[in-house]
Image (spheres, rainbow, N blue to C red):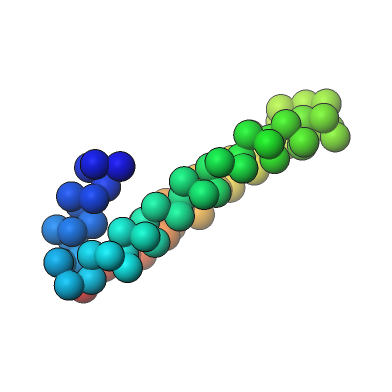
Length: 72
């Protein structure tokens, strides 16, 4: 989180920092439920394959999103 705060402030500027820092930390909210969701998927399917495919899709979406960001 400390590095994320510094990068967010430098990338977006001081005037937009509070809003952008909150958006950048939404991943913590999603991650807090990820293990519960993964456990539910494993219980339903009996395999980790579905979880890995889902995570691979999320990683691909994150990569596309990261490449789409432009400096303001």
